Image (tube, rainbow, N blue to C red; front, side, top):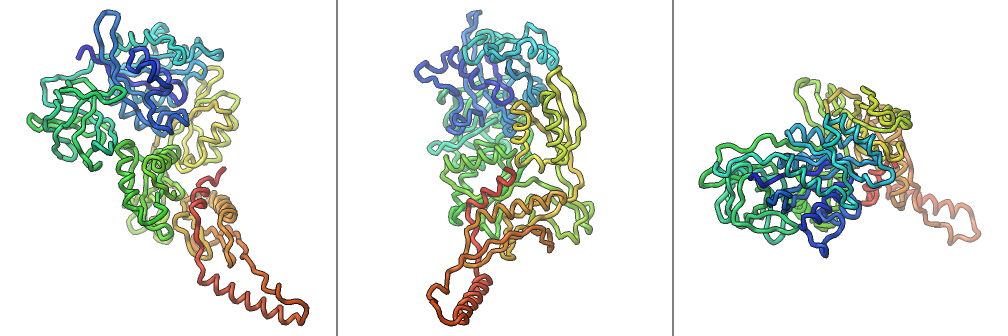
Length: 599
């Protein structure tokens, strides 16, 4: 165990985690020069295309130190975007140390601080690294002072590095060996292994990634999963390099994988503990936090018969993305589907993309919203959780509705304070703190309703600050709010998939936007279509799509005007009848485009 080190790489998005991980793989010869490619650990096409890490990736490096000893280094490369912070928290639970990367040209950002606090909560040893020091725009002295203020470390302990050129890689590896603590555990105690990730292999079933806290795991022995109580044989146990390397046994302190032939994804849960059947541990490993979804949206198959296929796909995707939470629901307009919880809008977008690419599932997504708490007049102390607008009690029985609030932390340059403040005020925010970190960097703290940042807040913030502002948030509490259910009606029929809960002050403008957008998107019919936005019985916005009209008088040439009138009256009656019995089909494109209502 004295020759094992477990560490993760944490940073704000785009500070060079994956590039630095590439240099560590090269230096330790984990990947041959021929097989090396940029973002070597990012194995999804979507990660390469967008240049972001979506999933944590574990890999084992073999390193020969200057003292002549061979060390086993277990590295976990983590995502940097706020929507994937749950992946970071799971990775941190499997480590004793963390490399904290700060971009020398950008300085400390909001997510840097957030990830640092996560690591400190788990008592991880922090190794500060100043990355991209070779760039012309690098502010080495200024950013070093920021790191010293944040961590309280000595200037000499900050390692200067460049993921691009490989500068400082030797110093990083030396620091990992000398500064990160040896894993704590006893190979002689009963087996306790924490599952921190998993994925579905179509040929071998579920593959679970774990860290052994105590005991030894052997290939071929019987193991038990604490949460489910299920028992299986460990068909294969091994370590993670660029591919899986089977081993006969793994001892305490090590990170590896287990294949048990499980085909049903429900039987493995991230955060569960694996123990041996022969000499079981008496308790599971504690302290693994449950995921809290921030945004909810309905996912429906385009064809109703694809419902079961969509269920299977979500089950398999959930193994690889533990932050995904879903339950079945039905809609009058869309049939059977699922209510799915996401950590943010980027997470929703990525899940949609992965369903399409990896499982060939095209889905219709309803308007995203957050989870509210409602109290009725009859039961003022009984809380009802409202995940969809249709679950909101009738206004006559409703006592109050509470919505979730967040504490948003924005780090920016002083030039953009005015624009950011007006954006947050427009989103019903309250400024609670303003601190100058340096002369050209200010930290703003706001209290904001979560529903207001769901759609386009992040994009607008980046536009206002020309890309310089960084943003991070934590949920704080629920507060009473004046919310109303906004219904969209087509020819008097409510489209439940387009209903949304909005603040009363924003209902008029939001309703008008949706009606205008639908008028552009819905195809014209043989009859007139009325598009209405309504709160209860009160219509607050309306647009009309005029009917496609055949020229019935074209065959009349000359003759009495009454003949033309007669034909037009007949057409009018036909249109009226058609409107009464006709139904409006909403194309999939309309559902997707309505999500972009704030563009």
